Length: 310
Image 1 (cartoon, rainbow, N blue to C red):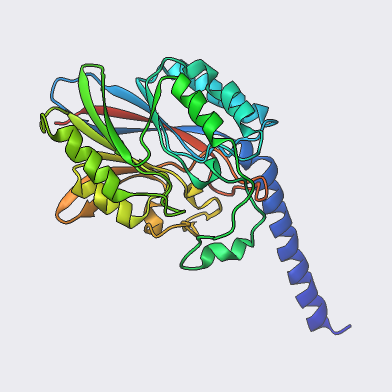
Image 2 (tube, rainbow, N blue to C red; image 1 turned 180 degrees about the vertical axis):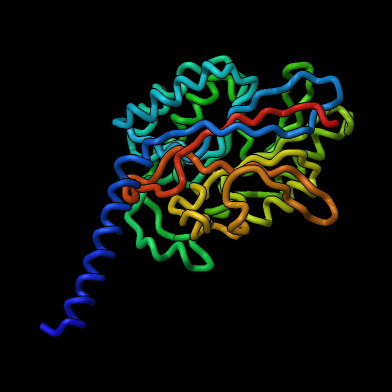
């Protein structure tokens, strides 16, 4: 065999070995290396005490995922004032069993939630290269999941459903206005209904709320722009998994929606029509059971502390 061919085969073998090692690390280690991130957002009225918001997203829960469930349970020790759940809680037809075990310590803590597509439909095996297309929306659907059962359970915790509606909540001496959408990735969002609900909420006293929080699963620009137009101070979203696989020094390769890649996770500002809101996109805690890998992108929950504006 010519030397040049032997050298080429050696390089191919080395690349394959590195790829296999990276996949093994991402699947066996990093996928389970949960991390709590902490950020502060100065939006409260002067003199307000800090409000601790626990942002959970994209659990994609399966019943056997005890390690993830135990890690989520201990987040109750943070004593959050509010929990924001941005969807994709379920990852298996029996995922609600794991959700109940994970969320049990949060009973009685105020919370709000919206749906992601994987609260409706079970996961499917997909070609990973489809995420590099401009549109990643799929018309096909997996098995129907127990979303009604999930809704009943979340309601029993005392959490409020924000899917295509608006509501109010008072906590820590702060009056919150909250609104949200159903899953934009499946085009279940109805921004017209959200705007109507906001108008109705503000009809009696438009200045009642101290802070306006907006919640969605997938941070599509049409939704973020509408939220800013409707006066959101802070926007919460998930869906992206932070890209799920990232390149050190470069970041996420894909976003799975039309948000700019540099805003695929974490805290940033969203500008629209000369208005601005804080945007927090969670990298999420799970993965599809058909793509159980993360690389340079640990699974996360975030404690978002709202503080008094200076």
